[in-house]
Length: 364
Image 1: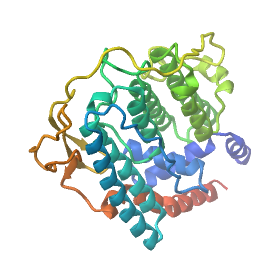
Image 2: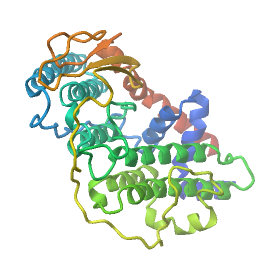
Image 3: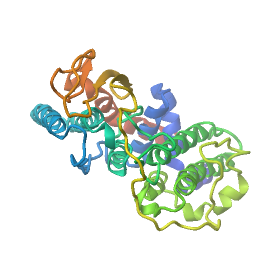
């Protein structure tokens, strides 16, 4: 028993299994939360990730540039107040939540006052990076991904790349959770299957890049995602060959995120092209002059009222501010409430660590 434990402990995926066990003890059932706890377990010393600064979308060519600037200024002012309150409270989790809400509100500004450029690479990349770097961010978000054959659209559909990555990650999490428990007789086989799950998740993310944007330099469209997964899983994709030979991602592990799954030994051509915008122009808001969507990160319903093509903002629309390109939210929550999900995850760090230690002590 001791020797088997040492074998499992030495394996790079042991923390994954620990996570599954304390996931059950904590009663976590939500897939997204499970993924966050899993990340917490692998990087147990870093309970709160940093939120990088994203490159803003240029106002040049926007249908209502002045309205956009006013909207962005209002968002920045609100965000600064939120950040000041978070710093006074000494809460890093609230600080992160303020940043995430700030980016969401910026997206709403662009959707209202720059709807004629939302299919372009600049906006699509902004949303893409926001989703990748803000741990509470969730779809849907306006005009992302861009529809097929949209005018003036980015040469690589970053929204589809992101969706493939997200689906691969979720399928990997489900696959890991579905592995047999350490109490089973074939514990080593269970570990091997979990590593195969990780490898297929990375393969799905990688395959999504080459399937969606085969001519584009992968460094520009999400190759760093795969590197992040390698760090998260503590499993280099280059070492996945034997695991993917033993387990077919589609037939044996039920992965569907990509139509094919690249293995370390696969021969494929890497694109070298840059991102560029296609032909055509957007002459009317793709989602209509007024539309609403529910942000699943904070359950707030946002109503977007599009600026007119003449630059004058259309008044009306429930919850929208007349005479401004700013999109407003109905049922808006305070900064503390918006940060609740992040605060809850961060606050679970101590509990998670205690469960990890309890689990280890039980084995020892």
